[in-house]
Length: 70
Image 1 (cartoon, one colour):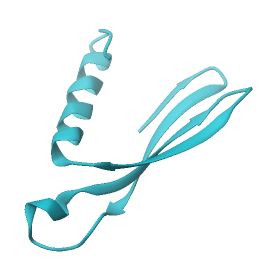
Image 2 (cartoon, rainbow, N blue to C red):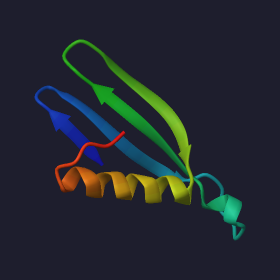
Image 3 (cartoon, helix red, strand yellow):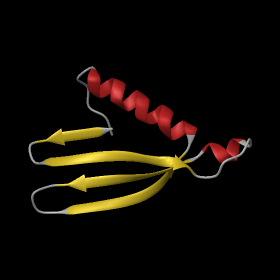
Image 4 (cartoon, one colour):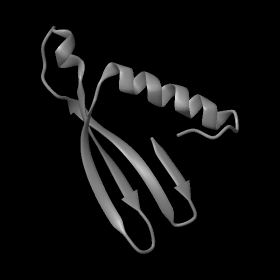
């Protein structure tokens, strides 16, 4: 997912499953948030749960409908 405004942007990169396996605890994904702008760049590594992905999906739906999200 990538959000861009002018020369600034935020990108969520999903890198893959944290651990393969059948347990529900193995459904987490390794990811990183990449921030770029004209004056700063950075990365933040994180781990996403299935619930996190549901929350991102809901937030994107709100943005798509023209509403603000936090």
